[in-house]
Length: 99
Image (tube, rainbow, N blue to C red; front, top):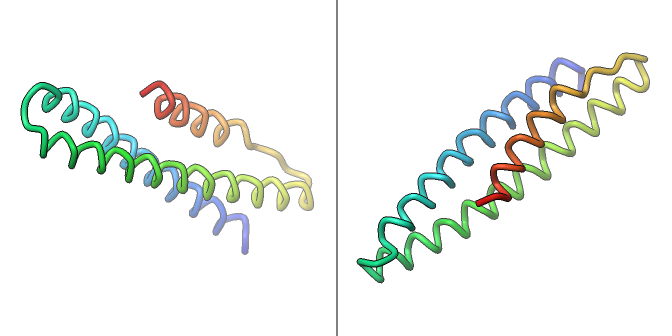
């Protein structure tokens, strides 16, 4: 896999994490809205939150694998520019964990 392929997959992974994070935050808002009302909707919302949490965990793991692949490739070629990817992951993971 070339460096460009890895970069492309990293960008794709970032996009997926961004989308899933927005879904997760929306589900949390729905949960708050249904908390005192519809028990069935509340249960469905809880299930969706759990599913979203699992997807975010999976995406985080895939993202970390891609970063490791990129780091390995950079180690062999002598370049190193991982700080941006690490900060993006930290940002999304922080927001995921605080909810």
